[in-house]
Image (cartoon, rainbow over all chains, first blue to last red; front, side, top):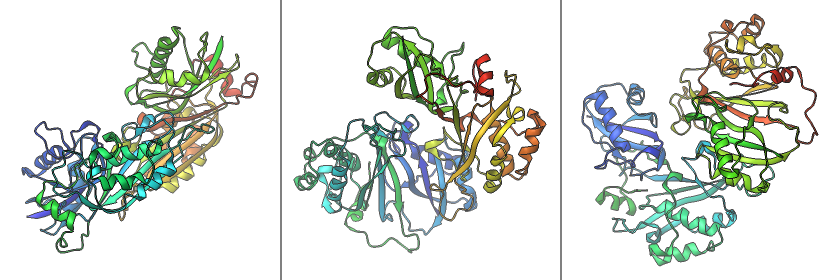
Amino acid sequence: MRNLCMTVSFDGTNYYGFQSQPDGNTIQDHLEEAIRQLTGEKIKIIGSGRTDAGVHAYRQVFNFHTQSAIPLERWCLALNGRLPKDIVILEAREVKPGFHSRHSAKRKTYRYTINANQYPDVFLRHLQLHHPGILDIDAMKEAVTYLIGTFDYTSFASRHSTKQNHVRTIYDAHIEVDRSKCREGHPRDQGVIELFITGNGFLQHMVRIIVGTLLQVGEGKRNPVDIQRILEAKDRSAAGPTAEGKGLMLWNVEYNFMEDKPEPPSFALDEVEEDEADSTE
Amino acid sequence: MRNLCMTVSFDGTNYYGFQSQPDGNTIQDHLEEAIRQLTGEKIKIIGSGRTDAGVHAYRQVFNFHTQSAIPLERWCLALNGRLPKDIVILEAREVKPGFHSRHSAKRKTYRYTINANQYPDVFLRHLQLHHPGILDIDAMKEAVTYLIGTFDYTSFASRHSTKQNHVRTIYDAHIEVDRSKCREGHPRDQGVIELFITGNGFLQHMVRIIVGTLLQVGEGKRNPVDIQRILEAKDRSAAGPTAEGKGLMLWNVEYNFMEDKPEPPSFALDEVEEDEADSTE
């Protein structure tokens, strides 16, 4: 049996999320159907984690075991020809038998995009939360720094989280602002705000609740240091609302493909072993 | 009567072009309907030119005369609330009575986008022509320089062009390459190629035929200097095929809003006076 690992990019607008569901129409369903058409095998793929309905992925990773002898370099083109236009496989590699997209993942990065110009961008409207009100972006930049570290993120997790332990490590969180689409002489055009956040795992709705809270900081309803108090509360009601899914994109999943087998799992990854998925954003 | 001039951005994917047609579902139809809902007036708007089905506009310009006393700053928001999500008005200004979006235009710029990476970009698939084959981008960059000047562009015009005169001036034409989405270590990812072309007017399908011809240069089927021979032929069959509409975007239309009335028209603009529209890309 070969173990194949692939990187897939998808526009989640028209799907009920990554992972298979009774109602169908998920990314996983389409990937498994394309593999079935190509190889004749009925295979269950393993994703690096779930993504919610309407959430996108620039680089989601999955793996599966196959008997197929199709040469590695032909898989992408062959599967892309059998997939809808909003799902594209970007890379395929053969990995060690023990590789597991979820357990072997070292770091994940999400991007959340807020269009803070007065009017939305018609071309990227499916990828951006439009927030026309004036935001204090410097306050938001300060607020994200308080998220970095190892904390119990219960306040930033869905009440429906099935995880026993909500301790995660955020390695990096920062905001970039692109002002290239701002109209000249329009002070209400504040640019496109992108939050990049990297961690060893994310709880259900975690990035979206962080964004909903950051927007309250930007609107002056909270102070940046309130993030510390919210973390300490370990209570979902201490944080802000859950921002819309369409602004969220799984940006990258990092592995060490050179290793023979997964390293001893860290605390967060240990817990993942017990549970179906680490990330359910 | 007030004369209002507006800048509109639209995703042309789901429309039969800018200008009203018997079959309906054009950008103009939706703009006129939104104005009617807002003011009660049945108005014909004047666009800076037509765009074909599936073609987009970052900044299309139109004007119309109205009796409405609605303050200038309220028009954008009021109309955007009555427009579909893929049409957004970005700016509104009051102009002199003699201003005419088509006759008063000084320069127009189009952008054409070719994704020359091995696999398409799922998020921008409605805005890019995907060309996975290897292209000689330097040859394409050289080829576009031969387009700059005042020429008879008959070879680059649709056979259905209704214009008497095909002489136009191209002020600038250049290619930019964005490699930010290229996968590391994948030589077949050549980046996203953007052609920007600025002129005093464009003939029907002109930019798309230029792009179809440039792609043949990139594929090694023609030499860059062939552009000169094609121009001299004044024969549509001398040029390449018409590239898909979805990669084309009306990028900008330039005016001199400080002038009291339009300058004496140049040759190309003179001809426009006789004809319905200058650009029918």
